[in-house]
Image (tube, rainbow, N blue to C red):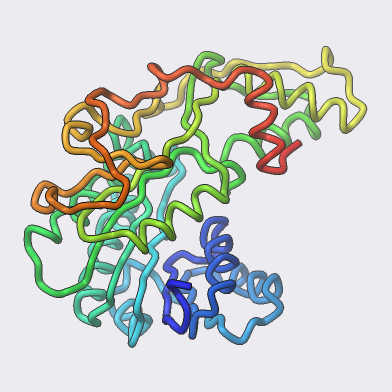
Length: 333
């Protein structure tokens, strides 16, 4: 019951991951959970979803606005920062807005947390921050580096850490719900490239990783969950089989259209670079990349990670049955 009687702020908390985090945190009987976001409609829907829970307090605010963060962090113990511009194509078209939200917004969070003497802050990053080829990944990389640099330029007792996500199944804009909608409504599925591979994690895994990082953080680390690799073409095939069966559609009547890579999109993703792996530690379910100024910290049960690049191109993708099992576990089929 790490969070019992604690005061928690979730920035960008009305999204898929934020909503899941609230469900988990309420089980540990916190004193209050504040949810800061820009969208009053999403806040209203979330209030209803949690039956107007007395421990939830909603604030209209924006990570871009320092003053709203200062007020929201009053007497807060822990901050989880999940607010972001995350759609690759939108960030490509609006790179400065991506910088304002993902970089300057994170800087504001860090500055406000230091000012208000918050105990710990966890920032949610992405595998697209590794060797970035798009504006979204570049902004997430910069934010990660700012988090790591706090150990070198310590201004307060606040502990900062990052968690690095793969693709979260079911999050807004993720490919699986999009594929399912296309199959049901259009009997057509758009695939950028059938050989493209991605790291995939369930919403439950993303939530648990974030909370574990918050508990375990000692300062400046990046926590990376071990997760399976899926091939986009096989994902399309399995979803067509299952959704066609559920909706009495003919499989051979569903078209697969290959659209090609979008600007800034990669065929493969990385979770950890070769250089990062040289200092990384391995636990049963995750890796920990310590900051360069804080690489002498000990974590129970940790061992040195293998020195290699952790890429979706070098890991074996799930086979048909493994992918089907993952989709069932996540509740999509």
